[in-house]
Image (cartoon, rainbow, N blue to C red; front, side, top):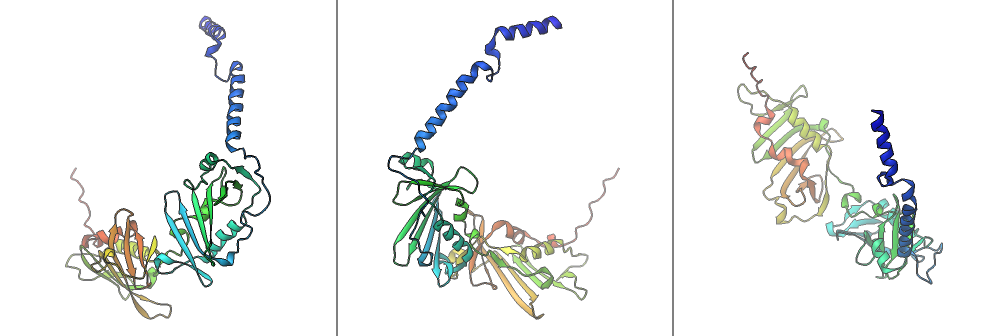
Length: 344
């Protein structure tokens, strides 16, 4: 055993090529490779002559109170538009559905606070690499002013979390921002609005009727405040588990995005896939009726269209939130007989 070990060590010593690449003979090569990589990066990002970095604002004359419209576009051409209406911001494509004003204000304040103090590139190839070129960007933010003029800002992801590269439209200089990220300019509507759609507390509901392709199912609270099912046949026993799970969903049903106040044939609400009718106690203790209509499924986005008596807006709601309502059958609300024990 010892002779084999000695022979192996002798072989390795005689054949240094078998050593790890981190052996001493590879160190100069690795250092050279690292230097070449640094040089290539420096060439790609080195500003051209005449380019300077200053502490001046990127948009020194931006008057926030004069901005009337904000348009955000992402790299996949998905776009959101916000328009100022008085002191608020709204979605013009959804019949002025309200936007969270504080979110838009925060975005605009971040834009106004951008500086020219960290110049990182001016060459066209560099702008493309930084995702701030006219044809290749992570976000494009267009600001329309009260006088009709427009300002365009291109934003690319930065080297670290919550940083970005930015370039003002019409200029060649790209700058690094340490306190602005593309997350502040999201193109998902749910990031900008109150997504609450149909919220009725489970404890307040007194009656519920579900109508889907499998039938009509009626439920009510009895004198002991326990849920019961109407029209049970002899020998049937109600199981409330699936009912209470649906009531939980209705207590916090959220939308994906608003569509507007006008009903369109494509929504499929003239013949709803699902109808839910509730009687519930309002804040004064009086009974009040509410209705939820669920129409066509947009299979490309996995959204149902929906309309509620609690809101004037037609909306998209996620498919998963309504799947149980669409598929429930009478048997789903009944206590199933126990599974027979197999004979030994």
